[in-house]
Amino acid sequence: MDSKNHSKQKKIAVIGAGAAGLVAAFYALEKGNQVIVFEKNEIAGKKLRITGNGRCNFSNADLSFVHYEHYSDCEGADFPDSNTSEHDLHIISSILEKNGRDEFIAFLNKCGIPSFEKNGYFYPLSERAGELCDLLVKVLRRKGVTFRFGCNVREILRNTDETFNLFGEKYHSLILACGGKAAPSTGSDGGGFKLARSFGHSVSFTYPVLVPLYSDPALLRTVSGVRIKAKAFGIVDGEVLSSDSGEIQFTDTSVSGIPVFQLSRHLTRAIEEKRDVRIRVDVLPDLSKDRTEEYINNRKEALGPVSFEEFFEGIFPKKYYEMLLLRFEEFEKNTRNKDSESVNDFFDLEQREEAFIDFAKNFEFQISGHAGFENAQCTRGGVLLSEMKESLESRLVPNLYIIGEMLDVDGDCGGYNLQWAFSSGKTVGDEV
Ligand SMILES: Cc1cc2nc3c(=O)[nH]c(=O)nc-3n(C[C@H](O)[C@H](O)[C@H](O)COP(=O)(O)OP(=O)(O)OC[C@H]3O[C@@H](n4cnc5c(N)ncnc54)[C@H](O)[C@@H]3O)c2cc1C
Image (tube, rainbow, N blue to C red):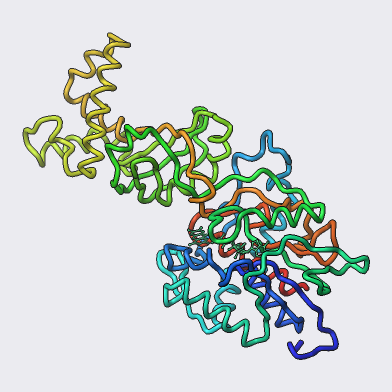
C-alpha cells in the first residue's frame, strides 16, 4: 500500500524515538498509515547514538535463541513465567526468525546505510551511531513521519471505540517504545512502564544488566587499569551459572569488559538478593590441567634457572601478576596454618609452580554490588510477554502495541539488544 493512500490511513502514535520506535514508525508508514512519533528529548535515539562505543554494533552472526535466555529468573520470580514459559520462548524466537539480521540489513540499505561484519559483529559502514541516527530521522521525515520532540508523554486516554487520546488528538493505534530503565540520562527512565501499567499491564521485577560489577576496592586498587584476556565464570552460592571469554577490565571499584557484562545478565538479581556472588577469572584458559606439567617443563627449558617470581614473568600484565603473587603467598600462609599436612606441598618447588597455575586459573573476585541502571546497557525484566500476542499487540487492550526494551526480553552484549529493538519494531510496524 502506498503511503499516500489516505482512504485506509490510520493515525498511529509511537511513543519513543529510540531504535525500536524509529523502526516501527518506518514500517507503519510504509503500510500507508499516518505516523506521529513523540519523543521527550529534543533529538532522536540518544541511547542509539552511544551504542557499541559510538560504533553501533547492531546485530550478530549467531542469533540463536540462547543469547536471549535467562538462567536465574525461574525460582522465586514475582511472576514465575517471566521469560521462561513456552509462550515467551515461542514469541521471541518466531519474531527473530521472521525479522532477523537479513531484514535489519535490508532496512538499513533502504535508508541508504550500508553495513559490514567483523568477527561476527555487524556495524554500519560508517561506524558512526550518531550519523546513522541522524540519517534514519532524515529518511523517516522525508517519507512523511512527523516527529514531536520535547514531548514527554505521561498520560494516554482510552476511548470507548478502542482508539486513544493523546494531547487532545485521536489515534487508532498506539505503539509504546519507551525503552526500559538502563542509561536513564538518555530518556529511558522507566516512565514507559508507568504507561504500560496504566493500561493494566504487569511489569516484572527489573534489574540492570550488561553492567560493571563491584568488588573489594583494596583488591581492585592493585589491578586498576589492567585489561586482561581471560575466561570468566559467574558463580552464585558456589554454583557456576555461566562463563564467557574475552577482555576483562579493572578499575578502582569495578570489574567490567564484555565477559563480565555477559555474566552480569545472570548475576545482578542474585547480587540484589545478597547471595554469595563471585567472578572466577581464569587467566590461562587454554592450559588444561593435564598439560600443566608439560607447560612448566617447557618453560623451565626456555628460561633456565630462575627464581619462582621470575618464572611466570611475561605471561600476565605486570600489575595483575604482582597481585596474584601477593595473594598466592597469603594463600600459602593460610593453607600452612590451617592444614599442617599440606605444608610440605608448598616447599616442593615443582608443586608450588603447579599450585600457582591452579591459583591463577581460579582466582575469584567476591562481588559486592553492581553499578546500577545509570551504568547499565540494558534492562532485565519488563512488560510480561504472557500479556502480549505474537504480533506484540496487547492481549488486554486492542490496538496497543509494546516493543523493544520495554518488554521482558534482554540479550547478550554483541548486537542482540538492537536486533531485538529492530525485530520487535518491524513486527509491529508491519502489523498496525
Ligand atoms: C552505553 C550503551 C551501549 C550499548 N551498546 C549496544 C550495542 O552495541 N549493541 C546492542 O545491540 N545494544 C546496545 N545497547 C543496548 C541498546 O541500545 C538498547 O537495548 C536499545 O537501544 C533499546 O531500544 P528501545 O528503542 O527499546 O529503547 P531506547 O533506545 O531506550 O529508546 C526509548 C526512547 O523513548 C523515549 N521515551 C521514554 N519515555 C518516554 C515518554 N514517556 N514520552 C516520550 N518519549 C519517551 C526515550 O527518551 C528514548 O529516546 C547499548 C546500551 C547502552 C546504554
